[in-house]
Image (tube, rainbow, N blue to C red; front, side, top):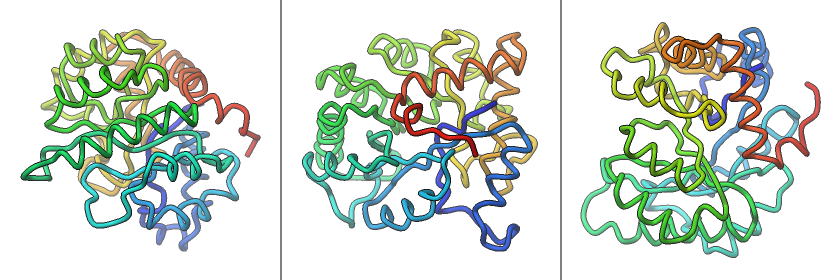
Length: 264
């Protein structure tokens, strides 16, 4: 069994299944992907996202605002904590820093990030961290704000071993996406070789970043299988070993998911 630890089900093209999310979930199960975490990017989309996933016992959700989202609601710590009380919500995020798409004075990103960390600590739900072209500031703020107390995952990790080591040192997990299958990602595959097996997660970030052999096409949770196969290959492990470990890691980190999980 595999878990897609980060996807955006509310952004998927459901037309191949007649607009029915159940078809996406069935196709995922066909490739051994049983559970998934649907990740929030804006509060404006949150209600619809929760309505989409609520009927499905094997799908969980997060609450948070992506670092690049500047126009919508920018929640307070108390607002995030209140939203996180929903029993479908098992995490805070995605949050973090992204200096690739945003320009100018980005103190607003850093302030929002700190509020998300505070909310995760208060709600006792782990963080989902987005980090792009902002490695030093992201890790520094996690350290300064004692994010270890909340725990979390470095989603869609695409940095070097030094950054991975620092994240591991504060108790975070490392999640590999389809990027690990890309020809240009040898440095990332070296990270996949070195991260302890008990700290690895796998994800799709669907509908983005489809892995080889689906690269260039819309991404779906089923393709978590190809990510896990590549991680297993570079580590010299079996797919069953990586699947078992990454699934155990998911339910260890997101313990609320274990409490709320029911058979499909």
